[in-house]
Picture (cartoon, one colour):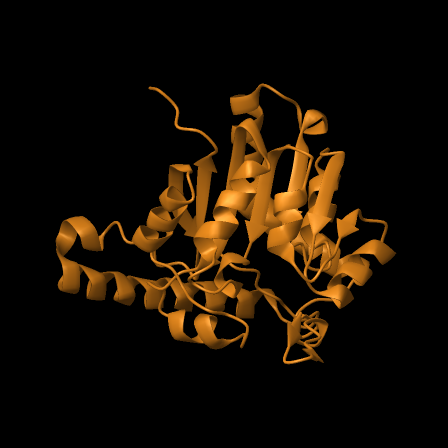
Length: 259
């Protein structure tokens, strides 16, 4: 990533939460399974393909934790793309197939391979608002006819929306379910679903089960209060439907499907 001739080493930020040790990969696999296992089952049913038959791209793959997860559940043909050279290098060191250039949009436009499934996890918020539509059009062009795109983004409805928006100075925006659906449609996708999505929670080795349980209880209380606030602001019908997790996830088809 370049800015005014200076290199922005994103690994300095990412290393706050992530390392390539075996324990951390195990934790990441457990997290990814909780968030994406049903998506993979949906894709396999939709395409009538097994995991080993899928061609999958992780666009914005970071250090490759999600690629490793995909391989662990039987997806053999996985490719990553990463803008940041440091993260791409870290992924390659553990044997992952990752491309890296300073121009991700051009990489998408030049990509000759078609993928059954493209993931883009916590990536769209890094793209300037006036470029997101063009990126989505380019991502769509890299999918097979029946291909599916799955992305997660910061949820502007969350109680921690401000922190999650500004925890990374390369973030350019957050999304509500409506703004995410709108830009996906502008990119040519048919939105299949937009749903709540959690973020990875890192626990220290010494953290007790009691402490973890208390955190989950506190989270339920905080989100219950947020739900009441939304009902008060927008009424029961809309207020009970607004997602309030820290992230939201979109699942979309490349082409419109006739019911």
